[in-house]
Amino acid sequence: MLEELRITGLGVIEDTTLPLTGGMNVITGETGAGKTMVVTGLGLLFGGRADAGRVRAQPGRAVVEGRLRLSGRFAETVHARISDAGGEPDEDGALLLSRTVTVEGRSRAYLGGRGMPVSMLGEVGEQVVAVHGQSDQLRLLRPAEQRAALDRFAGPEHEKLLDATREAYTQWRRVVDDLADRRRNARERHQESDLLRLGLDEITRVDPQPGEDDELKAEVQRLEHAEGLRAAAQLAHQCVAGGLEATDDTPDASSLLGTARRTLEAQAGTDPVLGELAARLEEAATLVADVSVELSTYLAGLDADPARLQAIYERRAALRALTRKYADDVDGVIAWAQRAGARLSELDTSDELLDELDREASRLAGEVAELAGRLSVSRQEAAARFADQVTAELAGLAMPHARVEVAVLPRPAGRAEPTLPVNGVEVGVGPDGGDEVELRLLAHPGAPSLPLQRGASGGELSRVMLAIEVVFAGSGGPPTLVFDEVDAGVGGQAAVEIGRRLARLARSHQVLVVTHLPQVAAFADRHLVVAKDTGGAVTTSGVRVVEDTERARELARMLAGLPDSDLGIAHAEELLAVAARERRS
Image 1 (spheres, rainbow, N blue to C red):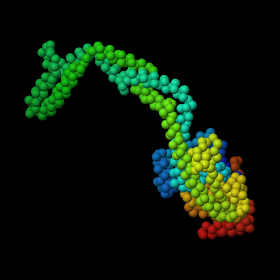
Image 2 (image 1 turned 90 degrees about the vertical axis):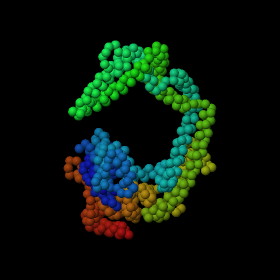
Image 3 (image 1 turned 180 degrees about the horizontal axis):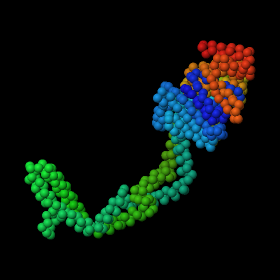
Image 4 (image 1 turned 180 degrees about the vertical axis):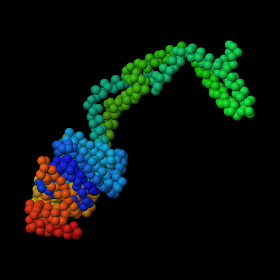
């Protein structure tokens, strides 16, 4: 859960800290006091888009900090991801998050003690927090969002089927697009293929080998300077081993080392130091002998063959002709040939290849149609369960006669999407199958079944949204849920039922609720009030926890706008008592 939230320099909030608890946290306050800035701060903390216009001119930057404590699978997943990125939790297991936004629009993020991309905060947010506001209600009216909601509800096996459909669709469209491109641009492909083949033929005739240019350069150096190299090697060989006929009586290096070693060994009994030096001279004599053998081998292999030198000149000229056209060196020429060969296969427009691609496209189309059919059946099964559970929740939200229906319909053919026969019907198919999903509401018996955007008032839409979230919470989801005035347009008994449902959610989740309804606020485990201070030159807001008498006064203000009214406080205390009994039941 989110244990603490600190906001500095954001909107009307100068500097305030929200101590949060598990269960239900309610945030209330006068209109314009800054309740929305709390939700905005949460959005920033978890990777939301930064709006420099909300940053206070003094101190010129907004800072949002949070302390997050996770458990179970959420802790394992999030901590592992953060460790991979170089961050780490505190010693007590808490995870610190921070986001800074300047008036110039620059943004920085910190997570687990390390600077991170803002996208990392977004990754964590997706795992641990779900924010629902009036904008989410509007988003729920879009058909794509309704389909996504049903897919989310349907469960892990359905998600695997959805992933398989998306993968097969991607492969199918890739093959279809490739086939169309080969047919559409056949002339340009032929021209490019001819040029590549000319280059490949030239390279194949020369047949360059990796590193060949460097090897030939070294060999030319030896052949061009063969006489000088031979003279140097002969003299060196004569000096160290006397292997060539000497012209004078000067002893060679090996003989001199042998004489020195024997002389020292004769005196080793008198002084062991001379024995050690004699052993080292023996090692030197062995090394000199090895050099002598290698010099002899070098001389035997040294050849001043003019024909070989001419052949190398011609070979290097052929290689230079390639490097002038295709790359800087021979290895680059070889790499160009490899790329050209791969490109030729991409440019192939032969009848054989086109037929093969046509068959592959047909096979993949059949696979996509089959998966889309299974996906449609799975959605229809989930739709019935989803509708029943949401309807049951609506009964507890003062809509006892309302019913939600989830219609899974084939997507009409003839749009921009491709069409395939799915379960015997020609439908438009996309990455997520061939279905359109529509949430419908029957507000009362005898009323027509209408899409949500046409059949639900603002208050009804708020309750449908809450009912859906309750259903989702029962099947998992993030541990922290944030509701930003989703009770707008609701009052009376419906408001009490919304408070009761939120309190029920808080038994398994941390719930943060921004509300203007006292019936909802009464169910809170912790009540925070955003208060505006207009005493100074600049209006600021802060947040404080209210309990006992202060809480009753805040509810009285929400009920009647009269925080000091005895009658209002009595009504507030009665509401708190009812909510307390409900939470205990």
